[in-house]
Length: 629
Ligand SMILES: Nc1ncnc2c1ncn2[C@@H]1O[C@H](COP(=O)(O)OP(=O)(O)OP(=O)(O)O)[C@@H](O)[C@H]1O
Image 1 (cartoon, rainbow, N blue to C red):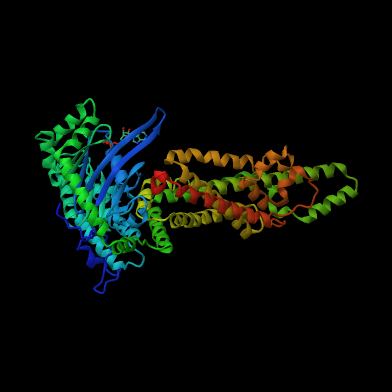
Image 2: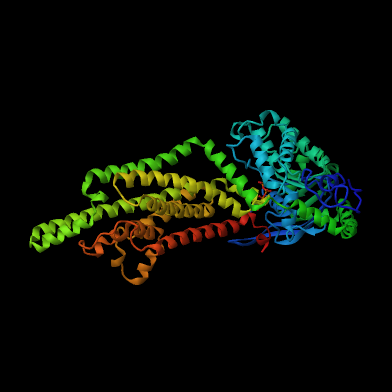
């Protein structure tokens, strides 16, 4: 392993996969990224700011991991193992120092390496409602370059099922698998592209000894197939399968880097567990780092670093770059959107209870509205709003029958008031339905989202897949709402009403997605909904007519509420009942000149969409180079 020649840093086995005999890179064959990668950690330090000042999680870590090496990162709890893994994989870059992969700066060229890197998190971050086969298939579609034939994907999925020994369970949903099987699914997701660099964060923890050994053997096989594997682990039973061990002191310094046998010799112990004890009981952890720097093992590997410098510089940079870039070519916007939409529909359709609740709420709420308004206010029926009413009133006035005029005015006021209330409630219902449909949709799968962003998923197709499916749900709910309420209460203008309520629901959905993008978990998302929805009720103008609101700066706040524009658009002049004479010509909903209101609702939808895009782009867990700044 230590005699790897420096003439090419690409493993020979990977070449036929990606190139035809004529030379140029082709993608008709499986687009695996089996090119072996050499990893150099140069002076890695990670400092964070705490209330008590700066804290170093990692300090001056240096080592070189050769292609095809299987490396375990070890150390006591809180030593910085995960921090080091994140720094090496580029997920959370070090604040000082650099990681070089085949001589190139990983942090600067992360996008080029994205598809060569697999990261298996500690938790089983997959959609538990999908089957094992579906998970591997979607994972392949997301990670393979555009235009990869379906049979290539199927072939690779079958291979991975074999590799992780889950062929018999391929049709089972992940939620029905055992803990160990789920771990294997978690690892398999990253294996579809056969990554050149595979990082695992305690991926084998919690497994029984037999399964843990099986997983280590599996990783050993992957190494044989060309991957460089770096793993954080607490399990010491099978460390002899690793090529190198990295030991960290309690304070994140490098205590040791070398082979398992060298580790036992260096620490003068017979069992790796004793090394933990030695590292833990040392009063001054830094002394381990200093001692290691004086050791022969350190000198040996430092020489290896020096020897490595020249071959890296000599390597055929262009070919190397081409290959990495080509394999990093992710699927197109449309392909990603299609895949993500298909997966989202599948997931929703498997969650029958949720679907029933979505339909029920769109059915029960309008039914309650009808019950409340139809029986209590028969005069409210919209069909009774006729211009003749006004004429009749005028005749009564002309006849000097003041009492009848007053009664007529009162009836007119009641009618408008009921109408106004019903429309306001429908407006709130639409916005609320949209918001509650969407508020959990990103946050509930945020860990998966982050994992897939690392694998090359783009924010645009992801958000569009959510919006597309949620729009269909909103449309169905709106049709139910408007059909039940508007038809029973004789509201005219059916389709314009449907469109207006649909836009409101869509705007609500966008608010929900913004909440979902900000929230750190589903509970927080749900408790944020009232913060967004209650202002929609207060600022709609239905409770306090905007004409009466003073001063102007407070009035301006009302203009920021989606409900205000929807309420005015759908209610027409009825919304101004308190500000106008009841004898004014009543205008049926949507008959006035409200074209600006349509435009403003659409503008709100676009603004909220933009906000969700920006928030998802700024998600710190997946912002590679920015994380360093
Ligand atoms: N964002 C942070 N703010 C403050 N301290 C942090 C932060 N992230 C990590 N730490 C601290 O850095 C140290 C190293 O954390 P890390 O998760 O890398 O340790 P670890 O060796 O993987 O631990 P374990 O084996 O228990 O998972 C810990 O003491 C942890 O509390």
